Each structure stands twice: as structure tokens, then as C-alpha cells.
Image (tube, rainbow, N blue to C red; front, top):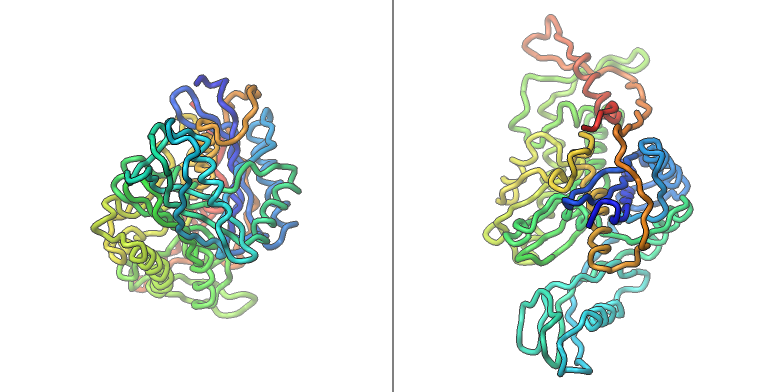
Length: 457
């Protein structure tokens, strides 16, 4: 497959804190060339669910405009969209069919028929099937077959993992996408998209859990012996940690987010006991001093709760530290918390590491896309290519030729000014108050803006 023969796939990640649109195409080496990238702050989504459609449409338009600005040659019509939220559920089913022509080998259309039959599975009223994922097949008495095409037998069946979601929540996503002038090519469960971006075949064989810590939810996908064993949506994410800090320490939400990123730690034992953050008072009110240790205790409490959910789900499916040799891969924006790997290993008993999507990217990508927060969006592009290569969906025979831009530009976002400047103070040196605001401000600006234009080599 040459570069010009490959379609351009666009991933649209509609998240609680951000909406990202990335256009990519595989090169002759099978790596993703990034043709366009745009993002915008998200305001109409809560806990991974589209609630305010108008605000979501505005954010999608902004992300698309930034994507077009990065490469004016792009033309975006169809997108692969990620889906998450509290309403996502999953169930295990088993189904089989008696073959009409047992004398011949099993054909692909028979497997498609078997999967279509599972879409008739009874689910609660108001829910809708998002995806049907086969786990292991069997033909007559032969078990644990990964692909039965070419086998011969009277009966073929499989165990299935069925993912469902609330019909209204799915309708809201589709409505927001369609009213943005786009067509939804497919809805993909976000942890599965993230998994495809950060996981290798070796990880799947060894057994691994992918934990995507987003703004509104944390999404879990568990693989064992090359098979998807379990998916779950944990109803807590980075926004919950920020709100805990805001309520527990009595600060503004923007200050809470800044403190979490700049000074936060997922392990209270690793935080300095003699370090404080001073928040100047508003309109003549006295300044407030906040212990970095207290900040870490709040973060650890919520992260421990999320990880306890992970341990619970792993026990539910009978996969513990002895089975998952690949451990836990942490991804998503929330995975960048300091000392989170140590807390994860302590809580779950599994080895942990940060999952980055670098392995699938061609050398021309910008540094911004190395961040784990873009794993879902890049995974959506990979899902599109899986559909294309396996002919699961219809793609046009001719594709518009779009060159990789020599310089991929990223628009800066508006940075809201902090109403008060936090100052880091060491209690031992309180007499002469060493201010770290300059360093804090630089890092804070880096947090809220996209990176400067970079020349692609």
C-alpha cells in the first residue's frame, strides 16, 4: 500500500475537558502521518456525556477550524468518534449457527451473520448496542479458535463481548457531529481506541489492563491471551480531583487545576511537609496558605478510589497480578500526575507504566501529540484503518491527495488570567519568602496553550 492509495482518516475525541480532531494517513511503512491537528476546550460535555449540544457544536467547530488552519488542503467529511460516559455497560453472550453448507469451509459471510445475530440480543429498554466484539470462536468440538474462516464443521459459534449505551446519549453525540457538518463513520468505545494506540500485540498476549484517565471518566479495557476480556467505565476522572481540591481547600477551580498539575502528587508520603502554596486573597481578603501535603492527600484519596474500582473489575473477571503479566498501562490526560505509577503498583499489585502513542506515529508528528491525552484520538484513526484494511466499511476507491505539511501549526488558545497568583513558600525560609511565581507562571502557560509552531523535519 503506497502513500497515495491510503485514505485520510479523521478521529474526533469529544471529551469532558477538550475536543480534539486529528487527520492522519498511513505511509508505506504502516506509520501514521499527521496531516492536521486541532483542539478546543470542551464546555458542553460532562462525565464524558454530551449534555449541551449547542456548546459542543461550537467546540467541535473550533477544533475543526484549528485543524483546517494547520493544513488548508484538508477536507473533512467523515469522522470516527469516541464514546464514553457513565451510561456505558457491557455484557457477555454466547451464540452459534448451524451451517447450511457443512461440506464446504466456513466463509466470512457466515461469521458476519453470526455477529449480526448478536445485535438482536435482549438489552434493557432505552439502551442501544454500540459494538459486538467476538472473543473466541468454536467449531463443533474444537474450542478457542481465533478465526474460524477456513475451518470445516456443522456448527460455528463464539463468545461475544457486547457494549451498550444509553440511546439518548448516543443520539446526542450523533446529533452534535451531524449539526457540525460531519458524518459519524463509527462510534468507538474510548478505552478500545486508547488501547489500540498504546498497546502492542505482545501486551495483548501477556495480559494487560489499559486505564484511560480522562477528565470526566476513567475507562478500563482488559486483554488476556490476545482477547478483549472486559471493559468498564469508572465514573471518576481528573475533573473530580480538581473539584475535590476546590472544595477541600476552598480555592477557585482554575487555581485548583493549576495546583494539581504544578504541585500535585498522587502519593502524600512523597509530598514535602514543609512546603506551602500561598494564594493571595481576593479584594483585600487575607492570603491563604495551603499545605502541599494536604493537596497530595486529597489527590491520593480520589486516585485510590479510581484504582480500587480497577482492582474490583479485575477480580470480577478473575484476572489478578498473576494473570496480567503486562501489568497496567496508564494513559489519558490524568495519567501525567506525579507518582501515579507508584500508587497504581501499590494499590493493584501490578506493574504499571505510562502508555504513549509514539510507536504508531511517523517521524513528522509534532511533540504535542506525544502526550497520552491524545491516545484516544490517534486510536480512532487506527480503528478506521483496521476497518479499511479488513473491508469492514465502505471507503471510496479514490482519495484526495494531501501532502504532509512542512510545518504543522497549532493555534494558541486563550489563556484566562489567574485571579490571584499562587506563590510557593518553604516554611523554613518564610522570613524571606522565596517566590516561585515566575517558574509557576511559565509552566501554567505551557499547560493551557498548545505548543509553539515546530518545523517538521
